[in-house]
Image (tube, rainbow, N blue to C red; front, top):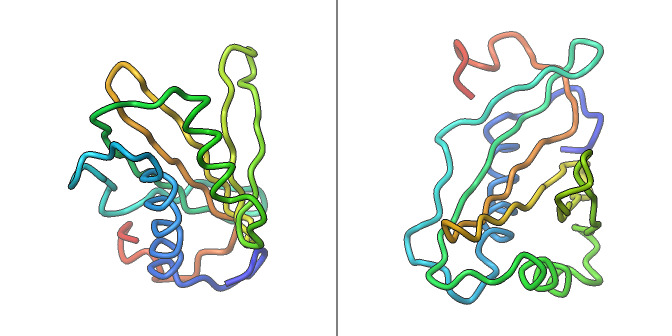
Length: 142
């Protein structure tokens, strides 16, 4: 499936995105086994022109939480030179928080958040925009 594609297999899209989310959320060395959590479905968000994008998140718990900077550097080093995923840093609109953004070659955007107080890492994803075909969501399930 390519960015801008009009027909998308939502199940395959969700599966492909989650593979990357699990990889990004579990790069630290102190990951608690069995702690990776993801919802059974995602959410379709509206884009312009009547299109939608799939969104979802994956969270993992760590027994010893690295600092945000350490985790970001770890992800950046792991993905350096990748043809499939690129990284960039971005500040929140209020300038208080720095985010690590990972972009897939297909246009999917992954945002990494660390919560040091509860020792968790979350990777939220949003796909490119596409047209949902009739019957594709099976009554809201996707």
